[in-house]
Length: 484
Image (cartoon, rainbow, N blue to C red):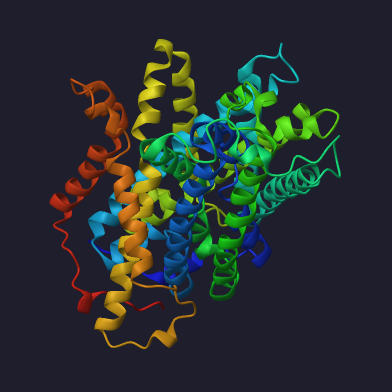
């Protein structure tokens, strides 16, 4: 199988500045997982259990992003981990990762269109949902059609709004904890309220690892932008270095504030989805602080997160299809760019599939839509596993060919522990996605199929490509490390 020449990557326009890349790194994983699901996580496992789960996944994501940063800063291609897997491991693996990732984000477009219309009903309950969905789809198309800079600017402001909201939440929360705001200092009394800071056992903690993993998905988008970054050797390492601090600040500190202000046995933590913004722990804390219109404010923030996710989904899909076309793993037409450097046919196909997936939710009681969602369930973890494998093989090839590590613009720390730890944890989460389906008197085969359908689909992509193109695992000594 022919892997595209990196020189062809110059056809894309390098218009993403350092501030675009940095803010994308900061905002990439901030979404409904933090704003809505964090309360339920604390309710299930206590504040300590939730913080531990998010910290473990945060560490895993940090290692994954340093792995991606090492490869992307040396070899800045738009296809990111799909291109790296093709070059450093096996072209069939790159094919499977690329199409799997495209499908995952194409379905995400449908998810965000549905979520956005639900959020708008908070203010406009009588307006039909499809009106908002069409409006949001139009906005996504415009942001991605203008140019890559248009996408970068929109994501910069989307991310900035989320960041400001979280910083405000943390500041208000700390002031409430020490009694500067509110009637009295809350202190640390709530941390052990109910069943304590840790409860639910190991199984609950493992389930939270999966929830936390889904919350962080989207972080790898930084690697996808490498081919359109103005100065990838500087901007990508800078963005990667911020990941640890953003995980510490935005997730761990937010969970700590929620755990100190709201007891884990508070029934309000059980709710909190797009239809129950008032039950978001962020809304509850802002309301207790006396903020007028706290629910409306948080509805706006979550809407921003949803629009950001949908916007990023279209960007990720179009660039992945462009890369697959360049590698001759997708129709040649999907590699055509317009005058503004946008993969126009890849964009059209992505919008069509996302819109059809959204429309499927209105037919047959939404069963087709749910199957589409289930089929994309583990796609993010499979992509992360691909990053870990690709980096391990990249460094192996680098050393096998006698290259000096000092030649790398950015070197991932803790190799080989980093990619091995991240890859193993990803694998454990993938296999243990629905272990309860196997623990009953009889195996819940329907539950198994729903939870694990992503795996056979991924393997089918891999095996079909291997059979058709006769690809082989590339020996370390033969890996092409030329970045020109």
